[in-house]
Length: 465
Image (tube, rainbow, N blue to C red; front, side):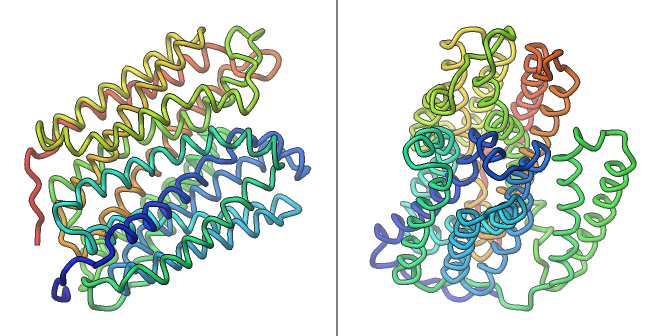
């Protein structure tokens, strides 16, 4: 049951600035340490297999907590849960900054992942607090910052380490996040629309268990062996847990995720597109820095330092931001389906170029610019499709699920890329050029799937009560 709507906040610009900064801070942390994992491995005196858990722990935690805290925001107030999410980001950054071994670092990154709920909470606050005519533009801007933050993280990682050392990747964000949490506590008003009723913690546990059982083998399959009993057994457990969760949600009077909402055409098609484009973007974030830093003597790579690798990604960051801003205006003229289809085509072209033409620096730069255009437009448009398709009190959980689906797609894409590369190794132990060609080629096929899925997006997506 929703509370009566109220007039938009009297300080919408201040509120918008705070929630946008919160969004950017979280998305920055998604990729900030990816280019410097080898240096972090050396500093923590750990193995290559263990250091990957620094990324995996963040991913798994975000996947589990994003929909749960999004739902808690709908129930108890998005303002309160936003502060909680920012505090988790800050605590995780502090633990990581002080970590002296790999176990503590993994714990810190897992705590940081709780902050993934910032994304759906921000969309909900924007819908609650801004005048209706400003909501699409603000959602587009927030979506652009979600996309851009990942690129900026890759860009800034090398220079920050060069100037201030590895732990600056945690200390500097910590200071910014604490400021954002204090500002959010002071400025963001209580949520006007909430869902009454208890939270089903059994449902939350089933969903969390199912997601963990799904994502762990996807992220560790190359190491465990895709045909191993561990991978197959865990995936079977995931299917059983998630099936039980869906059944529980359908029977619940107060579900964590309303399955009727998930059947809204704009919602399920938007989630499908989000998963497929997420496969390409997260795999690029995860594997392109290593590709760029590879020695050119192996037939590919550019002998780049982490800082230089970040510069290769700058075109993606720039085009992603401006595409996210322009997407709202373009969507008003031609519709969401046309924008998403064109975005998916650009992503497809980018990944195909990366797969088959990556010997020259200019080819990689052009590919990154195309990827930024496509993904920036797609994320901004998808966010507005979801916001407009659901009632205000379901904004948090709907966008939480959409962000989660994109994360799951990213895990699948990274697993696919890693699995292909691991079968194409040179005598030196490094991936061959064919490995990257086949890997990026497989991601191109997923992007073609996104083109086809985007054609299923309804032309109109009015809010559904």
